[in-house]
Length: 160
Image (cartoon, rainbow, N blue to C red; front, side, top):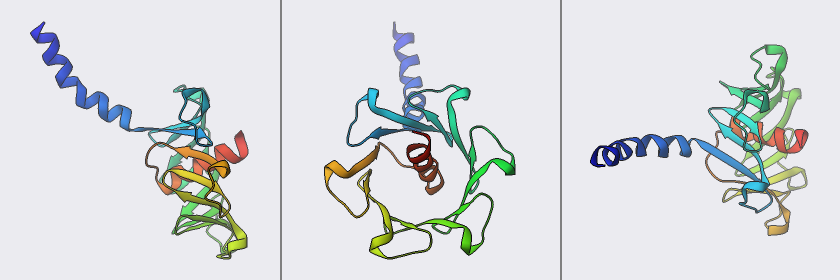
């Protein structure tokens, strides 16, 4: 019994670290497992709570977001650099799809309030400039890199 208890104590930090590496994204303000849109683990965005390779929506490598599990440059959905999200592998000004600045996502290179697509605050992503609970698009239960966030953005906006 004492050996089992010791073994459990030794495994606890590993289990805690593994669980902490997983970030779930929920519909609206929900925190119910049934409302999970996608799960981010090890730079991969999975459908719902899946962990199967066949359910990977996007993969983050370096500053690029790939479709599914691909690593081909032809399957790069976005490239993220300096708070700007470019179409595919481009780094040209005209190919900027989104700019993220001060917790807001803008269309293209704009910084006008009328071009704010979403506001990020306290783990919630609100539509436009809203801060009302009814306008929460999705809730993130952990920390994501900018690249992982835009992989989730892609999953929420274009896959579901």
